[in-house]
Length: 133
Image (cartoon, rainbow, N blue to C red; front, side):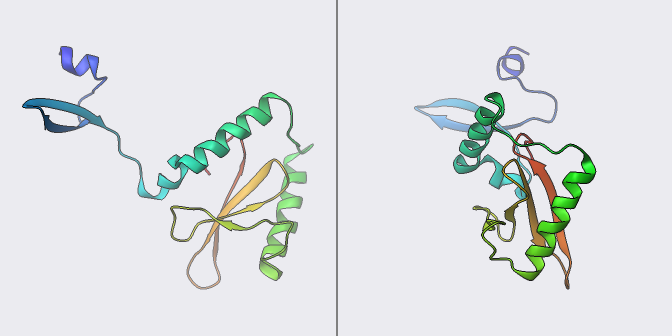
């Protein structure tokens, strides 16, 4: 019970056991869904920290309503379809992923997307404060 408590383990926890200098060392492991690994990269965590700082200092833009957000999003999606290289979108591939891209709604909101089968686009909208797109 002491080991479980001191390592913050629960039933079903994954533990790596390795031998170091003739001593068995237990290292708790956490699993991350492979579709979310990019979020935990050093680069993305740095961006998250910057976003948190901007939020604390009030350097964010907001929408007056959900409808206003959706109107801007629709405009950006139309632009994505007609001109994916438009500077206002700032499209870039998310490092550590095979096919997930990020684009801008405005200075505070982003959307991530990937291309599905045929002409389908899988979309996730988030503001910079959200932890998982």
